[in-house]
Image 1 (cartoon, rainbow, N blue to C red):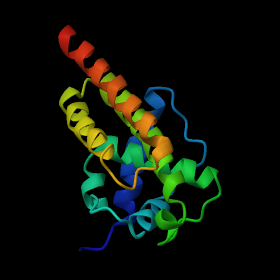
Image 2: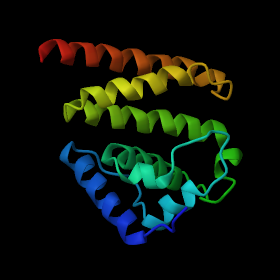
Image 3: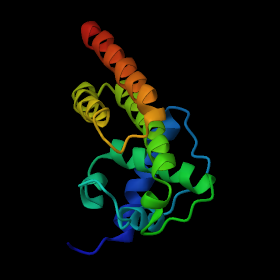
Length: 156
């Protein structure tokens, strides 16, 4: 893996912040490039996407910013064990970040992006690590955006 260029990360953060602001969303706590890099160095039970891949898609950067801002607002330390230490809370925050991501994606008319992300959301319902108390939230997220996508698609 090539080393992460902090200026590239900062630039991607600024682009995602602009997109958030365009739709009236303000991050509760500022996220720095180092926060994003540290978060992607955390141990995770998922074979997740790399930071380099995330940086190519402003909507994914936006998702990570919403997630990290909430993590910082709650006072959690971003280190290699954060996901294991706060697994259920991180999953809850992840669902909230996905809601913001999908909402903005729809408003940007990124319909195929939303359709792809909904496949991921649906797969989370089968995740044995999804806390049982979040299953209904995850279902509601999927159903809400599936309906919104269908309504938007039928208008096009």
